[in-house]
View 1 (cartoon, rainbow, N blue to C red):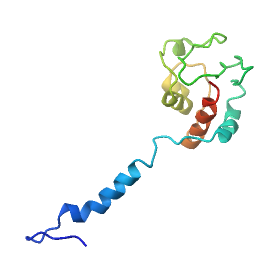
View 2 (view 1 turned 90 degrees about the vertical axis):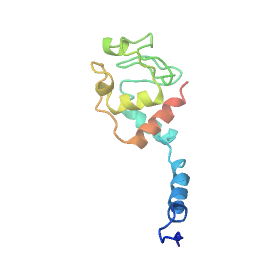
View 3 (view 1 turned 135 degrees about the horizontal axis):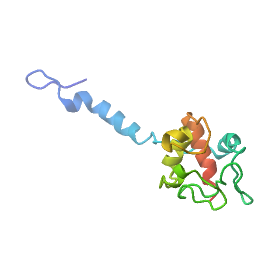
View 4 (view 1 turned 180 degrees about the horizontal axis):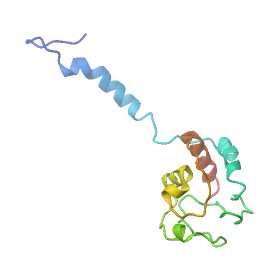
Length: 136
């Protein structure tokens, strides 16, 4: 029950304290992006596998190999010919940049050679990034 001051108005401490406590407890519980599931990411990679490879014997094909993609500068794999747009992008593939690129490649890098509609499902993106993280 909210306390009232001598003038009859409610005090903030008594009225809003439960809401402030609830907000502080849930703020740290919701990460910006979910950690992702590696097994589900392996399954999600199936839509990438027609153009890209990962693993010890990975090499470029229709697209570059993706080993160590997280933290790597864009257009830096020596066995693939990248578009001028990607070469001039000066992007380093952080998880946030990869997430944006996978949502809409041409939105992040207009003129990219990657022809892909994109992935809009945040959990699927998180799963895919978790899988790619395993290939350092």
